[in-house]
Image (cartoon, rainbow, N blue to C red; front, top):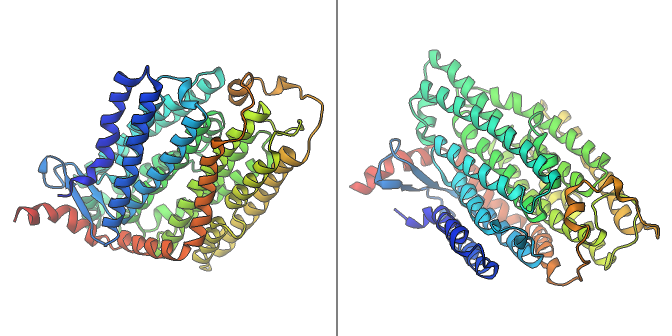
Length: 519
């Protein structure tokens, strides 16, 4: 076994309590430990991606217990890609938090940050549905602590709504796992692929119920309509680096749908047939529509970006709903793009709000260094809405190509193109108010005094532009790099999608790998 596979889980799991109990009173030491750990995670994730790129599926058997009886971690192209994406985003977010001193507004930011990385990496690497639930709970606990970081009534209310909604999802997750175990006798993902394929007609009803319950649970994580309503308030009121890190959180739900439903409950499965796609496709259309309308009608920067995330998840899940290798390739490319574009906008918004004093989209005096922020906002915005020449345009173009079948082309193309137009109008309106329109009169702050952004920045001094803009610029640069390297990136993603839908290699590696190693 390759012990590096468990390192992305073990490293932050060991570092988090060490920071919490030993370093919480010394911010310099906590920053150093967290930075070293996150950079080490990035280095490990790069190595694992190179290992997975060879096409083999690697399995780590905890306690050397064979699957499906023991706990396994599985490294293939998809899990390696998601861990690498998490590590890159974590470095950017941590850099922003330290430069802007967001991490110094509470004692436990770095410990919670590492616990969050542990949960995310564990969710991507686990080969067991029950342990996916366990890592989801780690995510929930850590993300709630990060959500209410630095306090405030508005942030606490949004955090409470977030945790209640996710606890409902956790309860449904347990019901789904119980139903699935009753029907198949296993929760190991590789074993599920085999057992569901071999299931009898008597068990098909329970399997369909379990598949739909899991779709609801993952839909909550992915902010799928009508399970989305926790996201706008949470993202809009979360601390900026936390909101940027949360850009990967919704992708955990999308990953789970691709991994479990794509492999075990896809359209080729006689027990579920096209059930999941038939439900996921129209819900994704509604998610796109809601996100576009929310962007167009937003009156604050936070909700503007939050609804943009909702719309991007709808576009992503629309491609996923086809459960086809090419469509999944386009979805994965768009997944990478939307993660970096959302992170760039949230980090940039933090810098803008710090200089404006609030995030209200109203006429105010022009901010310092208006031209720099306008340029960065313009680039990040065209990336988010999908205009050329950045990766968002390429991602949407590929998704439109993947959704060109006669039965879906009308709905899919109309939704994506109209939503893109509305999003362009919404971001153009916001950009013109923020950077090109100004007034010398002071704005009445009564309307914004209760927002988390106003509470964070009302009395803070206006910072000068320096290294604080570097993380946002790095995220924008990654969008440019993703567009410039679209060819090789897409080649890797094509191999990733083929590996997902040719599940025999995954199943054989997990279920037969231990016996082969023993021999």
